[in-house]
Length: 369
Image (spheres, rainbow, N blue to C red):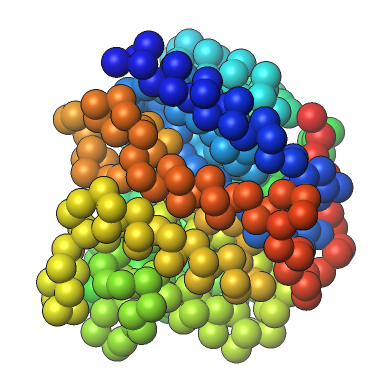
């Protein structure tokens, strides 16, 4: 199965050889770039990892996101970190010169306080990541879904999150290579704030009340658990839709943060649409159709910088993420969504659609490799 996939992706690489590669001073989707960036996650604990990275190169993805579950990497304080799995993947990513968004998640118990992850210990860990995988890591997202207890590791706390974010940002200022800190990774939820989750719109507003506008360039949301057709509008009772990005933008504009941009750092195809009177997206063809509509919507929004698809390669069969759509299927074949992503990305090449206007050209994140 692996050999068949390698042959197939090699043929795809030959086809894509004839698609012009766009060269830009700034990485697509970052402050300073007027173009929409395409990304996808590679699951290093899943199947066909190397083939997934090869596919990212064949597609000319601007970004690949890699999750760093801290509690798994360093379960005990002071324990030696086994980098084997990551070293192999990052050698390939560096070879293909693909920019990486590092998702730091799952704080270990020994690095937790009553308010959440310890800022000093988090800074130590993230600096280790950057030192080891410089210059591949171009951006970092801290504890995505921080508005939930699962993501933050403690009761969600906007003040504690902002304190940690500011501390990490200050620590990164002394680094030689510029790394873009992406804030939030907020997850839309069905209910109001409670002990173990915090409405993301309210969480974001409290971030702004604490001065987020002055030092956050990029906000992010993760749309893993969503429903509805791409064009469906959010309501008071249901925010878990693709167009939830419009509600986030309203909060940004209400707080005079029009220069800020938004990243979708996790985009999953809905598993069920029955509540909207529509059939579930259970076939690969319907899933590809949903993604085609979704990407067309996202790239038309001038304030959205990058959207990351879940995922390049399938998760392990016993993983909670095993039901997510991946470009490489469990059988090692290519999902129809591959063609959708390929055709959308082709619009970013020379001779394609014009760059989107209206992006600030200040504080450019240059491609450093």
